[in-house]
Amino acid sequence: MPVSSKAIYTSKIIKAGALLADTKTLLANWDIDRSVSDNLEQFHRENLFGKASRSRVEAILRIFHQRYLKDKAVTRALVYLVNKDFSSEGLNRILFFHATQSDRLLHDVVTDLLASMYEIGRYEVSANDVKTWISKQISEGKTQGEWSDTTITRCARELLATLRDFGILQGAVKKRLTPSFVPVAAFAYIALYLKQRQPSGTKLIHDPEWQLFFLPDKAVERLFVEAHQVHLLEFYAAGSIIRIDFPTESIEEYAHVIAQRSY
Image (tube, rainbow, N blue to C red):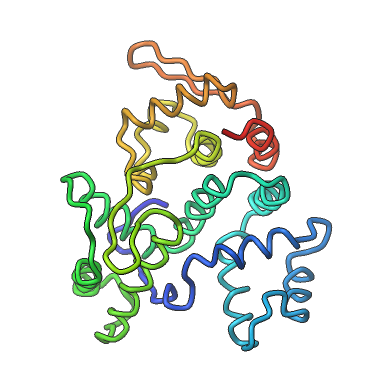
């Protein structure tokens, strides 16, 4: 997600959260032979989640659509990974990545605020840290109008809870940035997704999206080497020339590869 100085942030995270259990339930029950609308209509009709509120079901389905249904290949890849019992930690990282691509506020609070904190060795993060950051974005005109203090507070708390559930933070009350760990198979999946945006191996290593996981360039390069060693991709480096090749350019087909060689 390219960062823009004219980014428009919304407060939709208040109704979202990580929704990991609900998302995995949806993916496990997704029928790839039916249309998106047919699947969603059935989920809504059957109240697959067992929620008391129909409006809550509708909210979950809207969020699910926004995060994981915009690209048919991604949807089919995620459905395959869930049904093949892909590692929970790896799947959580992949779902987190896709969630950030659809919500700029969630994306930028990590790459702008938290990544800078991590870089200077400050690992404890509070709701006030996030509120201050959000207030700065509001003052710079990056939201649709002014937000009340209540909205800012709710967004800050939900952002922290969401990042905790995705495994980016730890702690029930006091939140801490966690050491960056991305399973190699999940890393390779995200790398192929990013490579579809630009083919340069050098740019892929230096892609700012790795800041979502607080990964410095050296760590990214080590993960590429590890992925090469377990035959998830081919990585060659000769001086400043870097070449990265995948066994397929299809994210759906690649889900089959990483599921078979899950590490």
